[in-house]
Image (cartoon, rainbow, N blue to C red):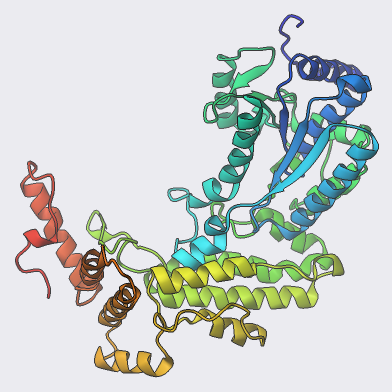
Length: 498
């Protein structure tokens, strides 16, 4: 192996010289061992540039040296911007065919989250509120877990893996600090340790490139698998407020680097600038308006008091200062989100161009899982999902019938509500108690029955939200008055509501 080199930006050097030097470095690293490579590909400019450099480097090797597998992985969160998702899907298909034709050891893989982890199963099924910076539940489930699972499989099979990523120091200060920290632990030429995945190293070929240099490379070097880079530039242009993507700029000039493609449901940013710009800049993208409308509704925090439970997922009331921290979405809110999602899907299918006209915002597998969670985990035994589906689509829900022992009919639900005098808290508690009893009825061994009944009672023994807040404050005061008491529960308070 040659002496370690540190990549330098273009500065005043010709682009061909920079690319030649970098592809030679990639070749040296590729043939140095038998460790397979995994390239992260999102379809954006940085990952495209990295994959293109690797592709060019491998083509420059003799056929007998192109033996080590290169896996290209792209994670589809199932809520990606539809335009970008279509672009990436087409690119992966084109890439797979081109690699075979050019006899390159490159194979592409589209990864998706497990059904139990998808965005809509988490939000509509489990009731997780729309993601926030302090409750960022989506990234781990939708992106990190699928890619890490693939990388671990490669590591188990080969003992080690090298991740080739399009990360750059100029993306953000946080990214630059993280990359500088990992550089200190480099064990091989340009390879940094991966802090979260054992036996994997990270190679970042374009880490010193600027946004303008990335675009300069993409525009001057044709895409080797046949997916036109000018179309990629056009997509970025459409996602920029000013509809422009200058390649040679000064500090005051806007850049395509500000166009961030991601999930159309993302509420971690104040505004989905890329989708908004696409709709504004292109009349043919007006069909995405229902998606933007639904995303903005998810981001509306002013309605949380009406849509979210005053209890946490486990039934407890948790305080922040003297206010309760809102819990998961209520049943009515989750059912409403499902209706809105079906409505958005119908509107999009009616207006979308042919290549995305069959768009599926939520899959049948997700609907089955949501139904299971509602009935078996949340004990919403009226089983409302098939009816919502039928009302929204005009078609009968294709799922199999659930165990009649676990589902209550409309007449039974009406009688139960009447018996509870339309008190929503007591109704949900009584419904859960009935569901638990029915669930354990046919079991030979009923271990856990009393714990399940007790949990249902504890969750529903409040008169209302105000009563629950008062009770939580009493608990908090008792903890503060007796710091030595490390375990306090509801039984400590003698005047707890019945």
